Length: 413
Picture 1: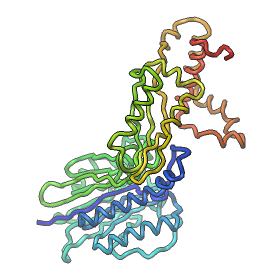
Picture 2 (picture 1 turned 90 degrees about the horizontal axis):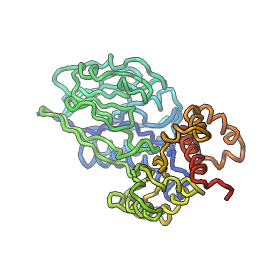
Picture 3 (picture 1 turned 90 degrees about the vertical axis):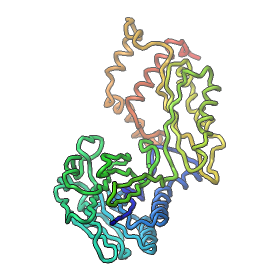
């Protein structure tokens, strides 16, 4: 019975900076900065432990057209470890690290194969017999808009056919439409496995044949939450077997807290502390963004006198790097609601109704124009965080103003 086993990973982005968590303690910042390298090493460790035949690296090995010598050496060292273990590696470049970029010329192990800009099929042999063909290509430039999937064709009916494709499933509008394809196009190729890349969210599009986005190997910002890693795959005459393995040791989280269930700021603090101390945060690095929801008078309190920042700084106390990792609350997102009803205020005539009308019709472009002098000021911009959600800022400004007016706390105190 013929059989092959391999690991499938994609979107390494080895030299990609972390964004979204500002002012990390130095020890945590250093740990976070090296996290993608450690995830890659964990993938190679897993490949050696599982004694796989080969590892697929499906695009965006690096984050930009320029690859630092350090990052290339990290990849080279890990590929040498695979080579020494008798494990082959097949690699393609994606839109971030296209072939027209700049890099130092290094000598890679003979067991490594880097795909060229044309779709090609490379044989994998066991005891001089071809048991699998690996199909793939590398991006010649950053923008590849052609339907590269049309060039993938089975080479024979006896061997396993594995497609490596760094591209976008049509309909996923939140991502650039590079090398677009449809699910039916992949199915029609009659391949045994499709190893996809480009989408950083782990997604299994089809179970048999497996068509899989493994996601990136390490989340680099707050939208890339959850476990990151690679897939172990075994193909045989029986049904294909796939299982995901987490290899990242820094994880972004967004736990939800209903502040409507808290009667005081102390109780809210205790709820957050319980989450930070839970067992599944005991090892590895964890970056926490608490999302406050619900209807509560605490919402109004959190808008005053930097209460939200004070609460965050309190939660950060004594949470520096430890031997097994860290738990660091880096942000509190106020998505709760005040105890007064906005719709009722809109029905009233007068100043409050006028404020709500202006807020409803205030565009994000208006906001950018209003605050542009701050961000263009040489000194002021150093103290400002980058804007992540303009609509949320407009909402918070409206609530702060209404709170002052309704609760009569803006009377000169």
